[in-house]
Amino acid sequence: MRYISTRGGINPISFEDAVMMGLADDGGLLLPETIPVLGEAEIRELAALPYPELAFKIISLFAEDIPPTVLKDLIDRSYDTFGHPDITPVVKKGDTYILELFHGPTLAFKDLALQFLGNLFEYLVEKRRGRMNILGATSGDTGSAAIYGLRRKKNINIFILHPHGKVSPIQKLQMTTVTDPNVFNLAVRGTFDDGQRIVKEIFGDLGFKSRHCLASINSINWARLVAQIVYYFYAWGRVSRQTSCHEVTFSVPTGNFGDVFAGWLAKKMGLPIDKLVIATNENNILTRFVINGDYSLGPVIETLSPSMDIQVASNFERYLYFIFGRNPAKVRSTLDKFRETGAISFSETERQTISRDFSSCSVDREETIATIREFHRQTGYLPDPHTAVGICAGIRAAPQGLPLICLATAHPAKFSAAVRLAVGFEPERPPSLQGIEKRQERCHLIDADREKIKEFIAQNAL
Image 1 (cartoon, one colour):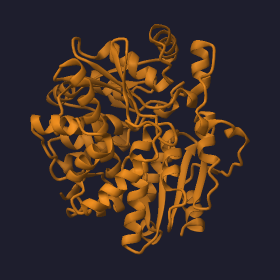
Image 2 (tube, rainbow, N blue to C red):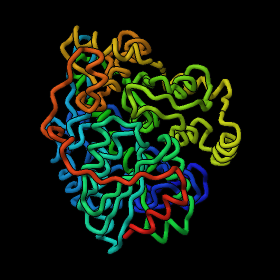
Image 3 (tube, rainbow, N blue to C red):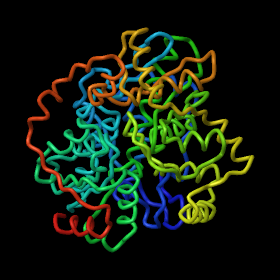
């Protein structure tokens, strides 16, 4: 399995090199030359496996250059950190199946990929006898999951940018209370999109990237998406056996397009997914894209689901590559124009392709609160606001007659203020969050200025 760039400017590389490169050297995103397609019998066999075994089988398809015994050990150690024996349990509440992705160390779905990626980075650094400085931007959950995946790793430092004052209090504390010497939290005066843009620009400075051995922890890193494919197979296997239905629908709360793109990849591999529902909050660029073919920038709106307060979806470029017929020249020209105009338009043929893959729905503040309240009243289940967006959008936009699986992306205790608005009380905190406000913090407030952030990295890099 070799990897290429969406912009066509690099020679094919191995999985290991793709992980280390993160953002392609031509500024594009890395993808496998081919997506493996599995037969129906093979899918049923795989989807019945326990989670770590399934993860090994799926990831092996994309990581052929890692010895199987090494890969199995990396995966087993990654999921040993989870607090539920099923890793990602599926629970039925009313007519909806909830895929719980929040049983990792930081209580969010990002742990599924970042525990693995942290162990993978450590293995590759040791194998190459090198050093690594990880750089990433977060809208809330990626930061803490990345930090917990990489804290105390040998010969690795991690620098995480988060938008100052625009993540939940718990999300902030999960990052800033990790004071290990290899962890650097930077609170950026700006939005997540500012941080994401700066990270991409820094990776675009190939001299700086090489000099400081920079690697990416964001979902621009291909290894993250590979790990996320796994739970779509796992959930399909559990629900299809319960219902005897071959096809299912997934509703995915998303802002950066990474989680739902992993589902799209699973579908392309042969998993019987009828539709992927893209669930958005008021920052609804992806909903406008699906419904109207309108991918145009607007202001970032602060919402009750801050991890989705994003306008520029970094993984969207990977999907562009496919709907443009794997044409890197068209990807490059389209994104050049997007930087100038802030908008992308699509042909009628392209829009038909999009509508076959996705449906979408935008859910506002009042609807989020109402969904938390009513879903709890009807089923006894307390969703966090991101999951509530997914439940509401799934019920509205999913095809009728098929099982609906909603991704529960975070524990409700991470967003207790929103939950309290809906039901009048705060969810009970898991042990990992108890007393977190009393812990020591370490964080650096910094302007959304690329050169200032580069200077900070240079001063603190390994």
